Image 1 (cartoon, one colour):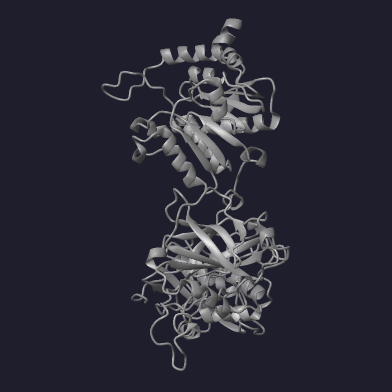
Image 2 (cartoon, one colour; image 1 turned 90 degrees about the horizontal axis):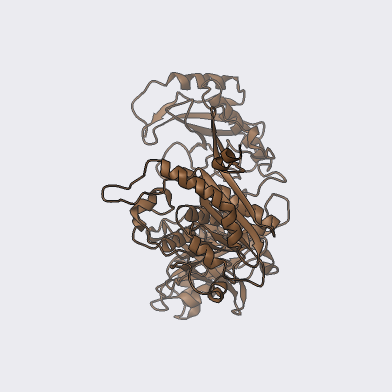
Length: 618
């Protein structure tokens, strides 16, 4: 509903004047302030020379404008009366409004590239310019309309776009999501299976409370099609899954995902598929069951429009519960399988019954880490990390976010409240072991990572230590413990591995990096290289004011802010990447020091010798 008459803000009046130069646009009325959405609504019509299927020669639109114009959002929707009713690419679902507003739900995507534009730099919303910003959006709507009318919104080479789906409103599933891990590497498993269907085993993604993963696809002969590649999933006994692979995207023209069982049947028919036949097969095994039932609908997709398909996309439907084989079937049918099916076909699964889509996401590492990850030569390595304090915990988190899939954590310490200011943990974790806390966080970051926990200090003889880390390609020390390194140096491995020791200098102002590839950690060489630096660090610490945690805490603390720890951990990742690439047979020792000039912070830079050594040399 609209409020009582309100004076149109001067900035929006300026925006309306900017529309007068658009011949194809006619503003129909004065702007109205919509109290429910707290936006101004401008209704206008756009003219085209001729109408085409789905788009008439004259279409009506509503522009919703934030009160802070020329800042804030501007959104263009089809008008409820005289607007387009179909859904196109680069448009949200164009459904009628339930609240009888003056516009439908099909917001146009005008501030992102479409129709072959490709680069975001070509699409620049003139935010802050009252004279041109509204005109820019209306002109973009005209361009969008032209491309839609000519079936050019998705041009050859554009990123492939999935049709927008609605999601279920069932309260129990509002926060749940169904996840899978399809990639180009798993695509071959589906070759020749278009039109096939079967069962899907489901399981909880451990340490992530609202995600159900597809652990296994099997066909109707109970043969495995493919399995989840991430870490083992937990039990999920109250949900039963099924899958059905289609040969092409499941859309109604021009680009609308089915919203009812009748629409799904229509799309299936165009592809020669029997939707009712698949439903009857599913219902035979779940009729009267107390479990929730999920149907995964899949189809092959390509990365870009016009290129070969390389991956299977899945949508998940929550199937309505189906009554037991009891009661009276519809008139004319006997109480048998056919009769119960007729009851369900024209009742629970009637054409007008809405589909309930669940939130479905691809959680393959390729998808989750697409915005940034380590090269495969690093992320495919198995890593053992000794020490998960400030530096170790931060390093572990960065490595797993960047793609490491197999990591062991070794530490005996419990988390204290004072650790939290520079650790990946929170106060909720106080009293737990650091390994337990960091392991849980890593599993919450990645559904693929396998974390092995050793809630103990490094101990044992050479043979035991060698066996403990025999399966790991990289062993990283972040303990700052001479004893731990001395123990590590007793072990010998027949296959060379990468050893690295990372530690912080006083206040987190330095990072010490030592690395080598070999059969044994060279502890003597490490001690010789790091000793002069530690002598300098000790003098620096001794000459600085002691940092105490509070009254009664008489042991001085090692000071270092969390931002310094993060910078240091990032530097260690770069060093590790270099060590893996070069595999140096001779030990590689580097020191990085924070550089600050009159212009401010300059980052970590290599330092060749400690200041005390330089002074002695001069």
